[in-house]
Image (cartoon, rainbow, N blue to C red; front, side, top):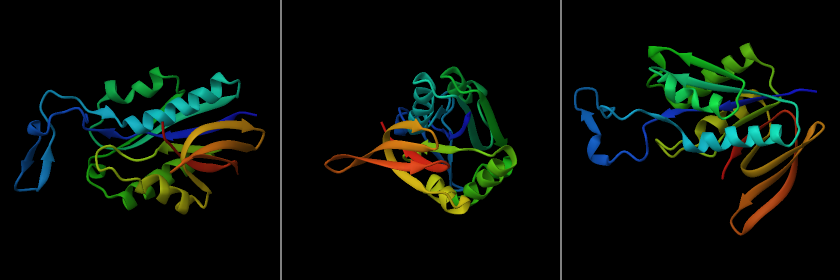
Amino acid sequence: MTVRIVVLAKQVPDPETPPSQFKIDESTKSVIPPNGIPPVVNGFDLNAVEAARLLRDAGADVEITIMSVGSDFVMDTMKKPLAMGADRLVLVDDAGLGNIDSAGTVKVISTAIHKDGPYDLILGGRQASDWDQAHVIIGLSEVLGLPLVSLVQKLELDDDLMLLQRVISDGYQTISAPLPSVLTITN
């Protein structure tokens, strides 16, 4: 059985960019992207891409789809998960999506998942590096009615069950979860 995995991947400003490079447009109260510094894929989301790829390397039959919502995607940036081993890239690109909040993002992603799915597993990074929040992946599990396991550092597939290591304050816990589920991945 092929396990269909969707990995959420957000394009973000490069977190290594010096703060002095960012400017504010006073009329719109928005950040002007630094000139000449391309965005990157959220590093936490790249951990999720790696987790999906490690399942394949362990012998699981997986199909990995990268999904992102936004506007003004830089294709050289968004192709990185494909270079890491993902099979497909689905971009929901619309100028109106550039400044939507996390609830709007959840709505658009859940619609895209229903249209492109079904999926057995949805992975995302533990948070986004631009606003340091984790609203989208948590909201997505709620909207889709799927179980959520956060802060997963290791996962294995065993038929229609996953064996997971979840980070806790004093180490990790080993738990199992069914397919389909939503997981946040940490390093």
